[in-house]
Amino acid sequence: MDSLSSYWIFIVFLACLPFFSPVDARTDRNSIITPINRDLYHSSVDLMEEIEALVHRHPNKLNIETIESENRGYQAQVAVVTYCRDRKEDDKSKFRILLTFGQHGRELITSELALRILSILSEEEFLPKMDRKSLNNTLDKLIVKVVPMENINGRKRVEDGDLCERRNGRGVDLNRNWSVDWGKKEKDYDPYEENPGSAPFSEPESQIMRKLALSFEPHLWVNVHSGMQALFMPYDHRNTTPDGASSAKMKALVNDLNYRHFQGRCMTGSGGGSVGYLAHGTATDYIYEIAKVPMAFTFEIYGDESAPSKDCFRMFNPTDLTTYKRVLNDWSAAFFTIFKFGPQLLGLAKSEESKLATRCPDQPTVM
Ligand SMILES: [Zn+2]
Image 1 (cartoon, rainbow, N blue to C red):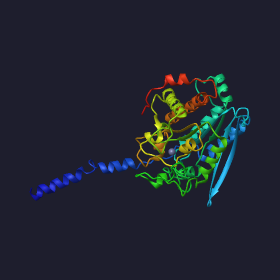
Image 2: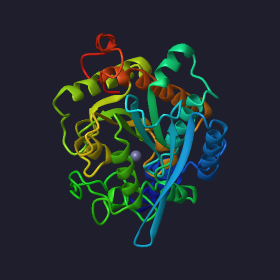
Image 3: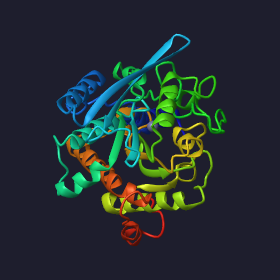
Image 4: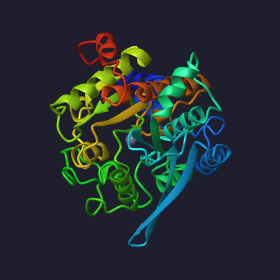
């Protein structure tokens, strides 16, 4: 090749560079960071104020308390809303449910769902096609405790611009800080995601939640997250589900929810067996294994798997009104199905278990 040909080849190469630069294009696409959609999402302050106002409008059904704790100069507070229609909170015949939302700061949609569920419980909002008489019969038998925003310090860091933060206000993952299999690290351990803390229950938020769970003694627990669509049961630290009758009841319930509300889209099974990695020191494993709560779940209510890894608001939260509404409608309906069938499954109310079982697919359905 003579030098003139080389010269022209070089010129053509330079001219084409803008059109053939896949690395640059990918970088541009990945660098798009979706901001929090303030038209759809409350700030943490507004959301808690709205919940407090709701509680004060319905003192016959709702109350709110704030529990504070401190460890080595780090303080946290957790608000707990209790729903009990006749305020007979010491009635041991009632079915006790403990729901927690917002354990990871970046999962804003979960706290929006907490507000929606409380609004429906207060009867200020309604589910479509809800049979009021049947609902009243169901709700008379329940005490529901709702923690709308477990990790308020971490959530504030997200609102200050660290959109990928899931840990608490001093960098500990609250869903790795519990004592079952605490501190064990997988090969792909990432401290930014999963820092378990200096010891089991080193964090005030986990201490508050443990105390709440042990004193309330719920029959049913749900830890609500986002990042995917899943209805998980124990275990998170093993790739199996537990043996026994209560495990079979949990499976029947999640399969029914998946069929009834999500057209089988949700992943089901054990957290550790389904999600692709084992998780150690999680809340749900403690609640099932140590607190002996017979039905314990982790629900993942939304995820956008097409979002680039740094685009965390989009990955964990709906960004448009239609999807935001659909997620809140579908999942609040699913929770009211739990309110109805949970007591029946545990034999605390007239059983409709056979109705559940025949409606469920035989195998867990993967989205
Ligand atoms: Zn999470």
